[in-house]
Length: 429
Image (cartoon, helix red, strand yellow):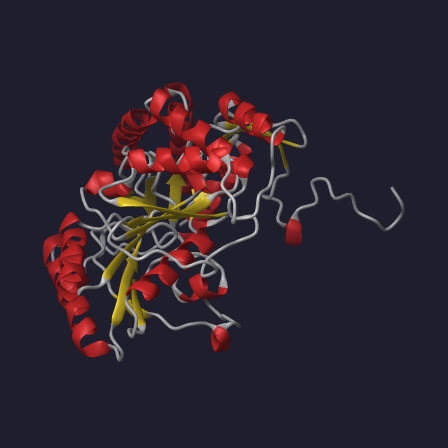
């Protein structure tokens, strides 16, 4: 290597010694460029619901590569027709209109565009205060307020409303009272807080980057009822919660509530880029040219998605998510009896996380402890997710692929227990 030049291999960005260079993945495991093995409890941004590099998915993708790798959206392809038919079979309710793109931010934008098309003359989209919908210009504006956002002058505006938080309810209220209060504030906002009428209410059924908050069922049902009463389109962003993560194929199935438009992504592609929307048959579709992307119907990713969905069903991964989640929750409650840093344990399914606090009475966030969990877990060969972008920054996420083994799930929790013990012993909070 020439003097003064650095190797790109294992060159941590911005001096971050905790950024590793991944070179291989299989199932719930990943390996770095030094050959070290890690148990991946991040599923690579919660995308590998089916473990990484599943042979059925890889074989389907390679077979498709030998046939056709690209077609402009004017044409159908066999994977497009197969995937559309499969999604219609498993979609909740009447969500039978399917649109495709390559990542979640564009899927959210597609959902917003379709909502505006179906409610002409209205001007506002309402979102929840701690929601996260992406990082494109539009979806960044539709997420929790980004600190020092330099793009504000050219971003659209969204109206944010409060949501219930079962762990931190407002004014000392109980969960149901907090839910009623937030529904009342939402209704007031629709009637008195916006000019030009409301197009849609867009929300994650379980807040993801905003704190892994499982919203009360009463709130979810209440929002559906308000949308029906005011003829407002309900958009559910299921990019993180779809394809088995909650223990059902979709969170809409888990909660028994059907939105008017639902976004999907991440877990559908088996590691290949794919996202999109499912929309009600009652909605008008896009006209030609209103929504089309050159690579939005990538045949290789679609073939991989067909194989992924087949594998999720064949391997009964929804049940495995429920079983792993129940085991993890039980173990975490046992660990919490010893580790006072754990303030709250969250689900459902394998949508598992813990909130770390300095004191369980005050619920003051334990930010340093959360950062240490990631660093110390990494040294012990387990990749935990951490909340960096929104909420309080003190959340640890434990979301391995749904087909992880019981032994792997147990190992992750053993390491977490050990790491929390060492952090408490060091007096870090």
